[in-house]
Length: 364
Image (cartoon, rainbow, N blue to C red; front, side, top):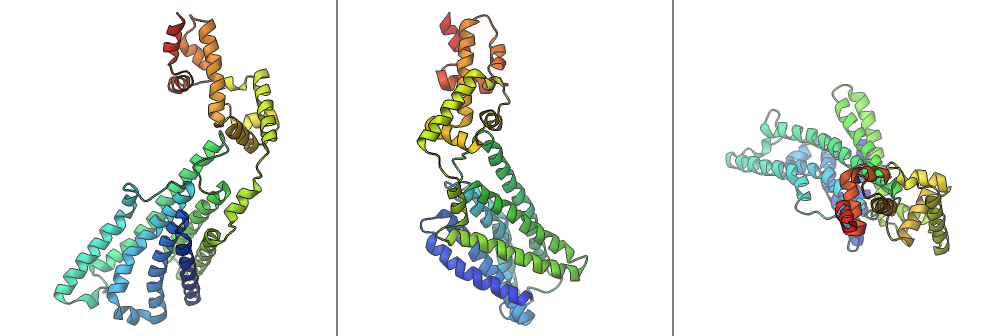
């Protein structure tokens, strides 16, 4: 069963990798996914040799099998680069992101040193001998890969949660390179795949029979998950683009109507004076979808929900500063819907070019 799955995965990924590189000329997502696919094809290809040919086959190509092991430390970082390219079309592997390749660089350098030493004393054939330094190093690499699974998934889920949080104030997230539903699928789908791999790895030391079954399930899930992602990237009409199309754009007349209703609502009921006001609350009051309100504000007002509300708050603050010249600025800040001095000063200066204190001084 393992042999058949390995062969199926290898063949499928090889074909998809070639298609990805053809498409990657004009698509960064395809490029990063293609790089990840190369790493998977190379490392799994070496594993397949050991599965089909046994230890004797590995013995005939010890250096290839030896140096393939550190490459597995690139699995998670390169898939992380792909997901980051989904979060933002501007993402690139700059100097800062190259730090993700550090574990691979350190271990590969160590393996090169081991190879040189082994070459000098003529013991290259003993690279995989039990009890040797490199034997335990390979064991450590397996642990590090599982550690990467945990750390990187925590980072990705945290990033997604931040995006979700911002969508409560502004439904349209400008930096996203894919539909939010697709982003959820790849982040949580990858987390589930990695969880399965981690659980399977630690099950080997408890119950080999159960571990074998879990390994097959894990491999099948990985294959299905990555096949969907590869297909989505390659297909002319991907799943993510279909989901975007389902979010039909409203006409200009409809958007203007929403803005008019929104302004009338806030004029009659100054909800913006509540510091905890959210897009969800406005949606309920207006009996309109959050996405439609956000789209209207972005299109007609050329700004996001937060900026739209802050302008109303600043107008109220200006009115208070003008009428009640003796009232404390701190008090006016709270009455205008702000709960921190920093955010109040920044918003005030953004719309007036002055701080509240500077503005009040001009009234004297």
